[in-house]
Image (spheres, rainbow, N blue to C red):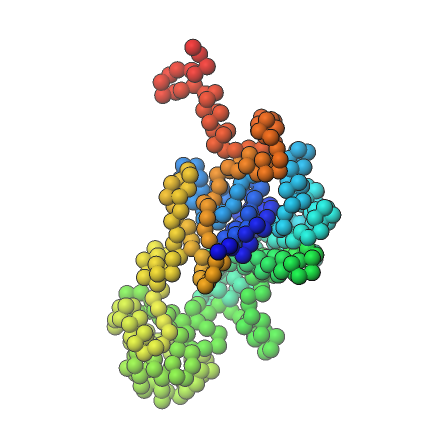
Length: 421
């Protein structure tokens, strides 16, 4: 069964995380993603550790299902090749600082003149307009300016960043649904369009409860540790050997939690805990009462008790524990794939399961310039012309380059110069 984006051509000008995450998902859904990279370094994340045989594991898990064309876009020939690819592309993605693609000659206004059906997506720190448009932006900057760092962490502590690159991923996901919406619109009405989002807006758009409370009652969302702003008990509690999460956030669950999990029916008669609002108000006292009970047994005991009472809860894992969990294993969230340089590697599986063919991991991330010759052949270039472009430094293939350099260098292990008879 064909994947939904099979036959869709994506020209990917993105790097690091937000853009590559978006284009990876397009590739997972079947699109042919051609990743444009500079050389000799390529995508910045290629330099991230850990490295195996000169290939970054972090880059690899974010760039599967893509082909790499390493090309000098500052040269006239290189730029012309990328513009030629854009003429037949269905989607272009980029996350340069605003204005850069226009200087390169790869902006939407220029490309859509030759490709009226083009869906073009830009991701940036602050968006293409507004007083901060020209600023560079990173995930941590966006987390700070979207208010997220001031509502994360423990009360009274320093501002805390979310443990993952939340705004980067939010931007990639936001761009993805904008691209798919624009592509559906093209299928229906025959016209492409330009879409753009930012790290700042994409993260801010996820603060729904906080937005409602601020504009509804002027409430300022501060850090609450693992607690919920509107429900209790709903947080992580200390146990005899770690922490366990509890989500007893309605009266039915609260009663089951008191009677069946904790064997503390007296909490039901405590006026401080008479309803959800009061439990939120007295969350400190409630935490002390619950943890006085929970520390008597290990986390596994309480997970079993919560499950038996049908009260949502679970262990708080270290990352190394996540992938040993039988649920994670059963849901296929770790996938093994063969990389031509790194060998057998693991990559994150798809979080979406479907009754039909929606996504698949078909190829590992490419080495830098792995498909340079292949992509040019698809444009009609002959072998001789491709070799000339390699020799002129317009295009690049890391393995080809390394082989040629090795052939020219002396064999230090034997002390023999290969150039000599």
